[in-house]
Length: 601
Image (tube, rainbow, N blue to C red; front, side):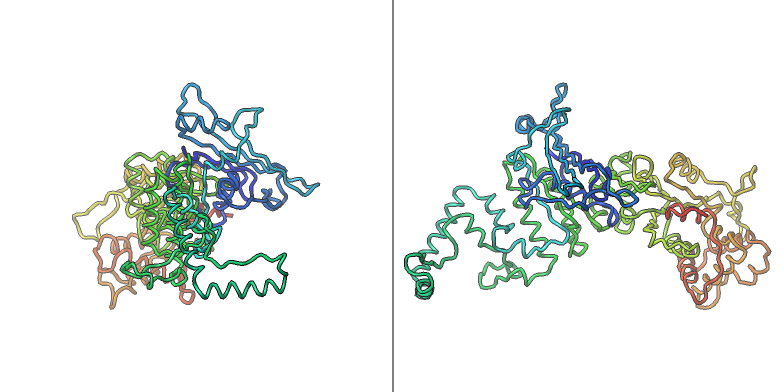
């Protein structure tokens, strides 16, 4: 049994959001303030204090959803939870909330619904919880049923030391209480009894008890006075384990009590790992529970990248024991887990929040493998962006922020990610975007890469093969396939150069080729031998200049090539002191404006 779907309506910034969940690990990614925390709060509040073993939740009137004009929506907050994969025993156990499928009992589900309604006149909330999806019937959701679905929630700003400290709220104590059998309990009780007996005989303890009794007698008299006893804890199992604490062994693991250290001598990251490990161990001991859930905000808090990947791997291995839902802003975590575990929370073109699972985007097995390969830490940033531009390689990554700046657009401030696919295979990532998928704007920039005529001759005679009808360079089959693949998607813009990036940059304006040559020449300790500035200046059209520069940089096997030119040009374009006038190619401007949601005026 696992939590299969959550629907939240009218709660904070979530107007109507649904998420499909799977057994095992679920990783929810998305930009800041998109509503990930609100979604997690909705789950734990719907299950209530009996499930989370936390204090009851009381909503504030500001928890209601607002319209765009700032007024509150006049509708109740509603959270619906649907549970799937119920065994025959679980269908009997959760009969009160069961949605029975008579034709296929294995496909029966269970559901819990919660509704909070605020009265402006009374300034009070009313709350009701019911089970099942049957119309005109509200099944009772008992406290016993909720206890059978324990959920542990770890907030982003968690205090590991406080949560592991001795006391009633100690996570360590909860684990020990859950894991103990009768034999364990008797052993702990015997140790507590023996310890108290031994302490009663110590002179210091006797003197302290006598001193306290003397003061009490003077203050309250003999008839009202209760005598005090000094002991570590009452001989009660729960009280005894609440006094225990986690201590650190020295490096090397020597089992010497004299060398143990408190958690405050440890780093925040390692303490968080100890805390999460204790919580997982406790959940794994909930053997009598039909469903065990762990909800974690930002597990990467205070962890360096290697520990982030190890933790993500471990959480993924708990699929058969604990259903885990975590939110993250870490590209390291997002890149490390299998794409099938990922869900992306984002806004569509109308600003509506949506959640899309990667494994529901129609990727075939080969594309899934390819996506897993390309989603390294750098490319995983696309999962957190409001807009994405996919490019072939490093040259475009270096240049696009500078070109956008020339258009008055700051890609960073617009939360646009420029992502190199490391080649020309755009399909694996591109298939994540579109209608009923991730509806963030996606732009794809690729080269036309036409066949080259006169390749057997000197590089100065190389020329792109042209289409007989248009007299334009031919588009290669790959570029045509990319355009065709996304032609029907309103959220995807495909930009194809006339020839290559370098040619189109130079051809966009009469002065562009000179600015590019100057940047290229700066890469050399002396002067480029393939080409001079004067040769470019002698040509009267931007197209002729662009063709000459393309031949030198892309066909002439120069000492410093395309990536170095891109880096030098980007630096020059961003140099406010000596910033050259530079026109942006139309296909690149269109892509930038599409991803940034900033169409031309």
